[in-house]
Image 1 (cartoon, helix red, strand yellow):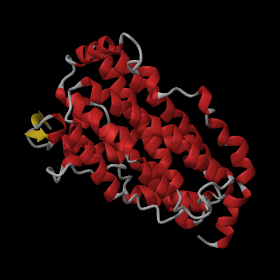
Image 2 (tube, rainbow, N blue to C red; image 1 turned 120 degrees about the vertical axis):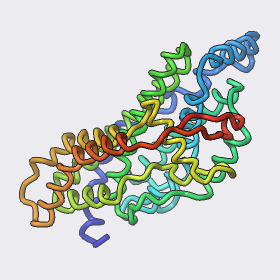
Image 3 (cartoon, rainbow, N blue to C red; image 1 turned 90 degrees about the vertical axis):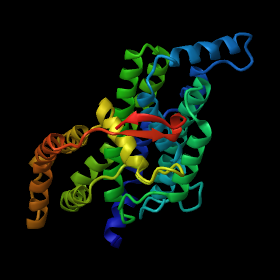
Image 4 (tube, rainbow, N blue to C red; image 1 turned 90 degrees about the horizontal axis):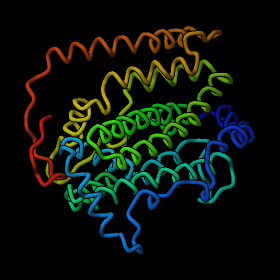
Length: 332
């Protein structure tokens, strides 16, 4: 990052203190995983576990595959915090830095950490999934890391996180809807609560990018076009369970089929962000910036057309064994 760009983020410290940190919740006011789980020391603990297991019996395996994939994605949080701390100008220099950017990264991580904890414990108590295989997948994923192609650039980084928080809000919201359809209202509440967190974090990240568009519209639109040309890769794109080399593709295919997260959602997110950042009405751009603006604004309908075409030519579904559900075969 050139020095003048680093200076932008330094100059935004006060702004971030007033406008971004307000989207964090005090720990004492946050929900915790235990709020949704059987009480360990209560006399009714075993009955509560039995009820949880009973509710989960009516939920199909393909739903559990998607829920496990979402949980594993949340559990790879060490990777995401590490990547945020590689972005020029916003790193946590000491590990306990008092800057607004470092404070946000640590507290955001702490809030997100509850998501994987809650889903992990629920899945364990349900008895419906092979926890050892899931635990191996988490270890493989954290060990593999991810490559979101941010190039240590905070412009690219905050665009990526804006997109991803919107995507996880949609995904968890849809798992909440499906859990309700399958009769598990407690699981629906769990997924909906996590989705609410993701929405709050989305607001914070999109606010940062909106500020960058106000201060530096040309380089920000170039960064947005850059990320979209690369395609926004999902955080868990390197997941592996020790058996299936195409695990992420198979998990994604089921998420697409169930309507949890689809190619249409990808296009809708970009369209939503363009409206949020008023991309269509940017002025004073360079020639390159104007071309980037045209590219980004024209991309959502192109993605939708390509997806419709892909659906028309889609191959016949096949049955794939998933280690997460004891190698039972799932239609992908």
